[in-house]
Every structure is written in C-alpha cells, then in structure tokens.
Length: 457
Picture 1 (cartoon, rainbow, N blue to C red):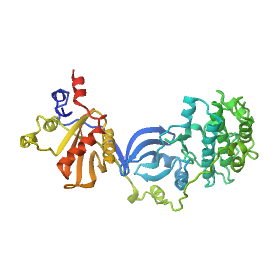
Picture 2: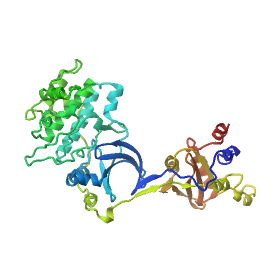
Picture 3: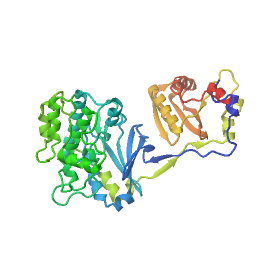
Picture 4: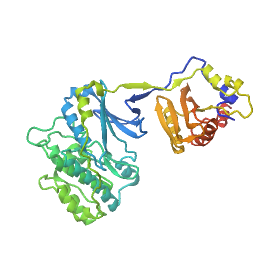
C-alpha cells in the first residue's frame, strides 16, 4: 500500500484550517543557516549549508553595532584580511566574508570531528607518539601564522578541532585579538585567553611578544595531551598566577626524559630565554616521525569582499530571507491522496503509468531536502534547489531525452510533510524505474503505512 493513501492516514489529526504555520529557515545569500554551534563575547557561530555546492560551512555572525560600539572595525578588518590569506591544512579556512545592513558573516570551514579536548575527556591522556603527532600539526600551524604576523593568544585544546580524518585544525586564529593592542612599542598589551594556558608575561601587563606567548600555550597543551591534566591548576586565581609566574609544576612519572626537557624549555617563565619555534623544529624529541606540511600556497587571494563589508558597498550586501515549505490545507491534502485524487478519473486505462507520486514524512523539511539530494546524486542526477523545491536533472539521454523530475515539500502540520515528485521531461517508464531505485534511499524518512497503522491504534 502506498504511504500516502491509507485510511488511517486520512483519519489522523489534520487541521481543517486554511494552513498551518511552518517553521522557518534563514537564508543568507547562498547559505541556509542551521543550528548554533557556539557563542562567544562578540559572535555566534552557526552551522550552514552552501545551497549551490551542498558543502557544509560554519558561519560566525557579528553584529555591526557591537563592532562600532567597541571601536573594533579596523582591528577586525585587519585580522579577517590576514586570516583569508592564511591557507594551511592545520588552520580552519576562512572562505569569504559577507554583510547585511546589521550583521557581518564570516564563512569558515566546517570541521566535524569535535574538539581535541573532548578526546582527552572521554579517553584520557594520549600516548606519547599520538600526542607528538598532534603537537607537530599545532606547531606547523602556529609557525605558519606567526610568519604572517598573526597571533592567536587563546590557544587551548578547546580551540583545536579535529576533522573526520583526525587532522588537527586550529580555530579562531587571530580573530580573538579584537581590541586595540599596541602602544607603539611593538608589544601586545591586552591580557586575554584562558588563565591556565596564559604565559606569565601576558599576566603582568608590561607588554608581551605574541609569538613567545603562543609558544607557552603550546607547551601547556603538550603537557595536557600527555599528562591528562593541567600543569597549573588552582581554584584561587592569585595562587594560580603565582605558580604560572614561577613555572611551578610537577611532571607525571610516565613522561619520557626527552619530553620533559622540551616542555621545561617551553614553559620557561622568562620569554627572552624561552625556546623558539625554529629551535623546537630541531629538538630530538620533536623530530621523531615529523613530516613538514605539504600544501599549495595560493598567492592570488581576493580581499574585495572584506573591503566591501566594511565600506557598506551596496552591491555586496546580502539579505536575510526567512524561508519555509509551502503549507498545505486539508482540502489539498485530500485531493492529493490516492482515493480522492481527481486524476484517477482519467487514468483507468489498463497499464497506464502515472507521471507523479508522493509520500509523507515526519522528518523536518530541511532533512527531507538533504535526503532527496543524497539519494538522487548516486543515480546520475544533478540537483538544483530553490526554497523547498528541487529539480532533478538526469545526465543520461533516455528514450525521450533527459529525464527531469520536479519535487516539492509541503507542510501538512508542524510534524508532518508531504513530498510530491512529478516527471517534467523524459520517458514515464524511466521515471518509474528511477523512483524504484530512488525510493530505496529514502526509506528512513518515509512515513510508511505500517508506521501510520501502529500510531493510529
């Protein structure tokens, strides 16, 4: 039995009102915004999908009034421009920058493997070889960014992400340094970062070098990776600072002597004698299994979008669009159901193959859209999406040219959607063969007649 035509389906609670208000989706330019991934002092980070390519991204959203109120325009512009020029395999990539009349949108690479911190929390300390491998990648990223004048100032395991292949990615590199920093002496003067990871010279408010401060944080991270706990940890902030100023910590017994020597050189409370990155790269413990990063340097990177964002160029402004699937009223639902569809009056000929079909689903509309795309692409169909309509265009020539299928998601109720598929070009029999293969990829979202019967008991 078709999932759209059972009597139990028709007996479910469908409001006779003209329409039910649908949950909206926000679209910014070519990106459909999703759930919030995190929030900071100045920004909110949201998951988003590029509707043109299907790629996932993370979008950092800043409010322009906050940027102006804190006099952060030039600082953010400089940092974003620098970050766009940084293309390194161990740094989260900044793709583009957009702006509406009230907000700035920074489009970043979406990294889906979680935080390195979570790995330690769930599995405990890492073995020395594994910790060294992550430390290699961290130093590679920090070295590259320092060479371009970018200093993180808040390095910690929570800001180190892992992709699906286990590759380390430094996030928020340079974007944390928003407030004015320099007093003309070439040093930074803003005390920021997480206290447990901050270098002593950052805490004494006498100015510090961003490079040596980041190296200290890398040393704390290396200690945490191999020990499973922080070298400096006290509930009393004053006592914590005293221990950091004196570099007072105890090594766990299981660390190798070479690892201890390197950490001791990094966690040197005197920045002028602290080990440098060139020296770390020559260290015997560090060199074990080390492979220099291999990637292409892109010289021609456009900063046109960055300049446009801060110049309020009208041609570059994007708008927030609230989109939702078309609501379907009770009469439309009945007219599309199997028993009441008026088209059945005209399709009584034996062997006549229908040109359209539909199914119901209790999944969210955006999930239905994604599943349709996932099921169609392996079958050789190009996917073109607009709002909650999808056009599937076959890339093979059939008996009547290329098969083309139009789909649309309708909302029946907040938790019930109907999806209509209609052949717009090509052979009808080929459409049915396509749907047979296509529907197998939709089994986990289709509200079947069995499920309907069980729910209506």
